[in-house]
View 1 (cartoon, rainbow, N blue to C red):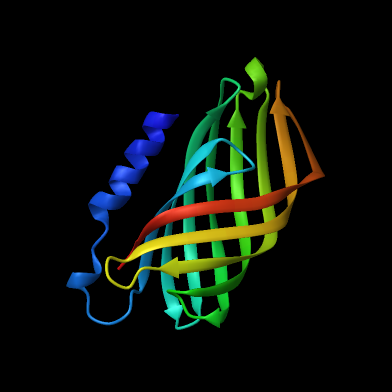
View 2: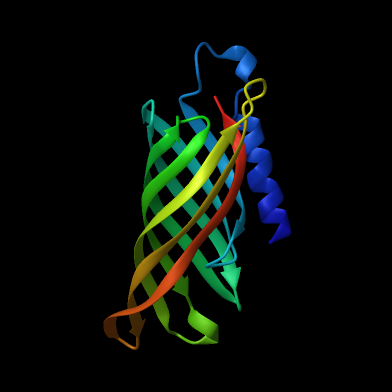
Length: 170
């Protein structure tokens, strides 16, 4: 898992541009999650400024948990209530699809769609474009379980949204 995190961070650094090559404020952020509470996965995020105080983020993640493979894909809408896209307090909506298979050494496959609200803070260094992004919130999760050609669906749980991302804005 540590090697996957290091590789993800190196990829973020390799594709990120420093502030010296840009004209005007950053319009994009690429980051990697250094701590994710709900699953032990490495997440890479790409955020795009749509207005001075709004952004859209795409999230992809992969990892393992108890011998199972965990895959994630999702997105966020962020509104900066104070400050702007580069430095400010954010309020947002997140939707993430997660697939865990096989679950705990069985043939069971668990898929979940979580949607929730969060608040946080994003800070960007003006010189290099180094960015820290912190988020805390709550999401409801709708799960489907598949095993032996049968499936079940239930709104079964809630989860805490807690992310600490580091990356580059350019």
